[in-house]
Length: 242
Image (cartoon, rainbow, N blue to C red):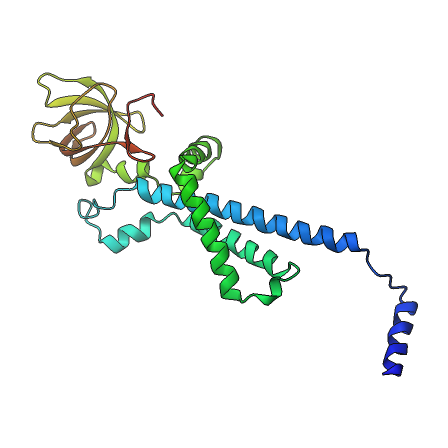
C-alpha cells in the first residue's frame, strides 16, 4: 500500500498535477443542469408542435383520396418535430447522467422522466396557443420549413384528388355557386348545389373553407362537402384573422 501511495505521489509531482478548485466543480454542475433544463424546454417546444400539427390535419379524409389509413398516417406524421423531440430528450439524458448524482439512476428512468416533463410542458404550451404562434413564425421566417412539414395546407391543396381549400371572395346567384381564392391565390368557380355544409356554415364572403368534391377542369370545382377551416383549437377563420 505504501509503495502504491509513493507511486501516486511521484506521478502527481512528475506531471505537475494540481487539484482543481471547488468552484470549478460547482460551475460545471450548474452548467450541466442548465443544459439539461434547456433541453427539456426545447423538447417541450417540439412536443407542442407535434400536437399542433396532428390536430390540424383531417384524419378522416383518407378514403376520399384512395389511400389506406396507415399510409395516410405514414405520410402525415410531423417527422421533423419528432426527430427534434428525440434529439432534445437524448441531450437531456446525456447531461443528467453527468450531474453529481445522475449516475445513480437507471437509463430508462432518466429517459422516461425527461420525456414526461417535455410532454407535460408541451401540452400546456399547446393549449396556451404557443405552438400556433411558433408555427406561424417558422412558416413565415424559415425558408423551406413548409417543405419539411406535412401541413393542413398541403393536405387540402390536392384538387386533382378532390380536395381544395381557400377563401370565398364572391357569392354567385343563385347561392349554390361562388368564387374561391385558394391557398395558392388561384381563382376557382365552385359549383355547390349538392354540397353539404358542415359546422352550421353558410356561404359568406371572406369565409375560409375546405372542400371535398371533384375537379371539373383547370378553374372549376364541384363541391360535395364543405367544412370550416379550423385554426389552433378549432376557431372558425375569416380572411385577415390569422
